[in-house]
Image (cartoon, rainbow, N blue to C red):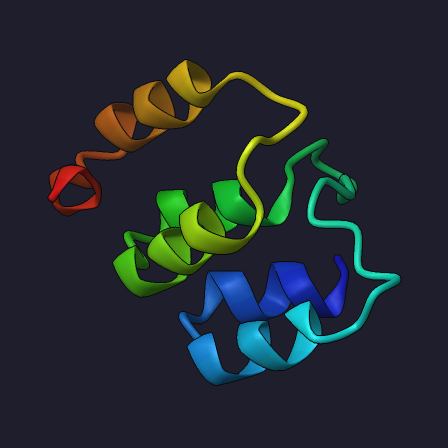
Length: 81
């Protein structure tokens, strides 16, 4: 798990913003469970981090539809606001 995965899991938006300031940051890096950082934020219902990703990193290498399905599976409907 990378620092970005960790920050996304715990809804640490200030850390995510700091990490985004580095040019070498790869927002599509996979962890050992083959998840990218935004998936961690979605699974944990971290709306602020998801919004930050949407403003900074879109488009992703993965389909956006898959992220929405992940939010539905985990009952994180606040992601849709």
